[in-house]
Amino acid sequence: MTLAEYITINLNRKFVWGDWDCVLFAIGWLEIATGRDYLSQHKPWKSKAEALRKIKKLGGLEAMFDKHLQSINPNMAHDGDLTIINDCAALFSGVHIVCLEAESGLVFIDRMEAKKAWAA
Image (cartoon, rainbow, N blue to C red; front, side, top):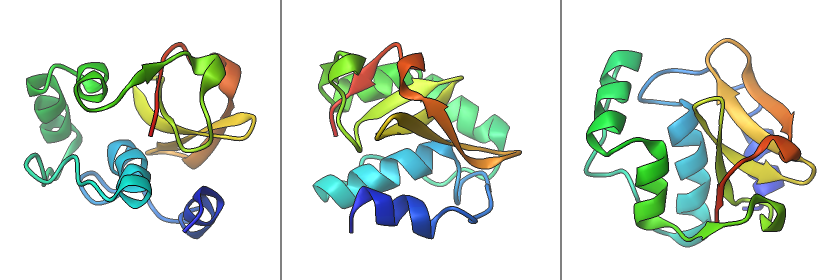
């Protein structure tokens, strides 16, 4: 599956904590791209509060990504690489960052907003 296909099939999928949230969206692509399951030992969570507790226990999203992925300059990020934007795990795709928000679903943000990135 390509990143474009992954984004397209999930365009209308509803945000649900622990089933389809920003972390699961970003890590879901990473699992497809690499074949590695990065969250199996930390699933499931059922609410925002539970997700935040688990992320905090891991040291935060940035620390979790730093532990498992190679940090790169955001200007060098390729499609499918990860970033964090507005406290949301997200993916680089073309000129955008794609993020799954609770209220809006998948949103597309200018990739120049990324301050940090990790290679998929």
